Length: 518
Image 1 (spheres, helix red, strand yellow):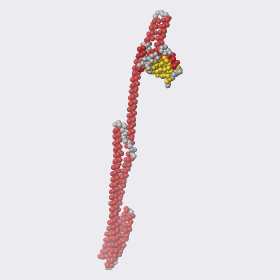
Image 2 (cartoon, rainbow, N blue to C red):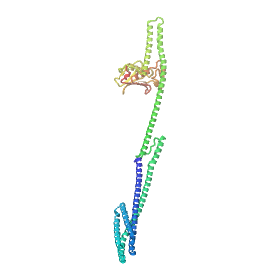
Image 3 (spheres, rainbow, N blue to C red):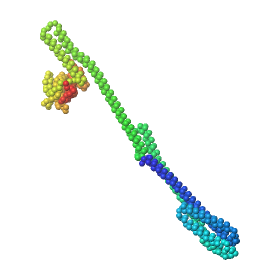
Image 4 (cartoon, rainbow, N blue to C red):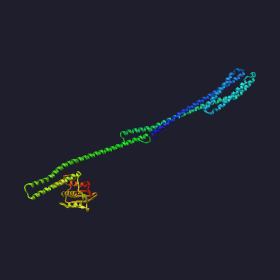
């Protein structure tokens, strides 16, 4: 039940008690007024009956005096008494009529008794008037006998009985009405006390219920709101019930949960942002290192290119100078031109390799792609000058879509490195891979250190093994091979051979990417 419904019910109960009390008060006042009116009428009827009795006995006394004394001049007094008696009867009748209107038809019997008394009085008045009329008063004995018979017989037996009964009845009615009024007043007091007790109990119960359902829960809401405002978003307010306070508690719990989720989401977002900033910073540091490395490589490239080109250019210039000095034999000119040609070819190869590596790094390298059998390319290379390499494979053909010339150049570079810097045993293993072919060229030489393997594919880098054993070489072989393999969409890596030596492993796809195809 909602709090508003409880308050409405409490107000309805209080209003019911108030209306019941008001109705009880009105009804009590009406009953008190009724009893007062009824008691007043009963007292007035009783007083009127007393007046009627007094006036009647005064009239009878006047008739007796008239016979005994013989005073006929009292006729006017008797007439006045008769009028008073008749007025008393009329008054009593009117009052009985008011009682009938007030209490109902139970007072009709009083009218019948009054009519009987009235008839009795009229009959007695008539008889007494006849006795004390214009007759000769000399017959006092006879008239007294008649008067005594009328007064002693009719009056004492019938009339007095009726008058006494009327007075007794009215006295009893007065007593009964007073008793009923007192009983009703006592009942009203008890009922008022009961209503007061009920109102007190209702007020105490309402106070207890409201204190339990409102004050304690409002305190819980206030404490919960303070804890939530202080940052305890995990705190939950007791939200039992279906009233407005429970709804407010649920709303505050949902709000705290929503704020907690938002705060958690913000923390995660900040953490992700911090991680992104950290990653971006690391990337920028890597890029900065690469830029610095590139700049260093550029400077080194310029120095190395200048150094590498100086020798063939010096040869070309020297041979040209020698040829231009005086006249020589044709064989000497041919020898000079041959030297110039070899120096120019070396320079051309050097420039071509540098250009391919630069285009690969710029993503602009181009290939002349065609169908080729890798085994056919390897066979003449394996049996070339120097140490013979053994081809180990389970394949009859190893067809690729590649640039045969560039693949031959890369394989030749790896074989020449193995022959120059490796041992006396060279093996070429060709195996199928999930997406193409795996080619491994390995030797049993001294191999490379981990530091040399990391830097082996940098331009103009020469490992300690190569620098010690051979003075020639520009350090472009492995970078060129790496550029060729990667331009085909493959990978190349250097590994330590089990048992000693070095292994160069290439992974070539069966089909070269279209963007690398010219």
